[in-house]
Image 1: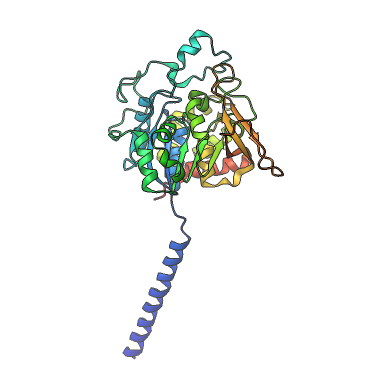
Image 2 (image 1 turned 60 degrees about the horizontal axis):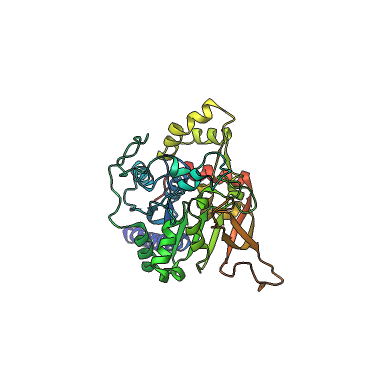
Length: 374
């Protein structure tokens, strides 16, 4: 009897080991490999960059090699301070932060504004030019409402870091470019050998078939440094995806979205949302907030919300004047794919133009409110 029980137990243990190992192997086979990314950002106190970053961290789907800060909606020193502090709040100080380019390639645009060479600015969206450049990421004009970071940026420069990582992981690195593009442009100029090694570049920028949000012609990110974006767009990257104002303007946080986030279990992301964005919705139920960089990250997480995208040859106007920073796109002709395009340097890119708004907002709430995944 004892021998029979021992054999039974032994068989059960063997089966458990076999099936357990099979299940674990199956789980390993089906688990998606994490996407290696560099997040190039002009991050603010708690804007679209921040929410996009938090969704990346929450999802557990990205191997975030590092974050590079760049000129754009904020001075690079301010973006660096905010980014370091956000990683502290999220408990992810293991992710390195590299400070990057502090001015556009052609220098500060302010003199052109003051001289009247650029007119038609709408909404006062001039980003970093709103005040003097800080001396340090720890000495901003005003102390951030989220506090100064205790951690420090890395010693190296963002441009060098981008090149190092692309060379280290050839064909694997996705660059998410949601700022002015100056870091990536400088990386291309300084290290041209990295261009064929980049897996893909995904930009938030441009106004393709709609008016801009900084001038009537230009969206802010690309207006902030058109010369840099031109270098990027004209480079032979294996794949370039544009997430322009056209599609982003359709996604807005409404009071309904706010209530869903408010009802979700508290995380570092939802807590900060309630503290900083919550009062805007509480005080005015009609208040809405357009999503930009969040669309870019959600595209990489789940592109199923995109309903219209097109292949185009895309370039940008760098002539100083009313069209400065305008995205210029030429549709491809499937019947005559070798048609001459106006600028032979322009490369074929994928442009996202429309979305299923309800589906997108469901995905947004899902990834923004989820418990952080390892």
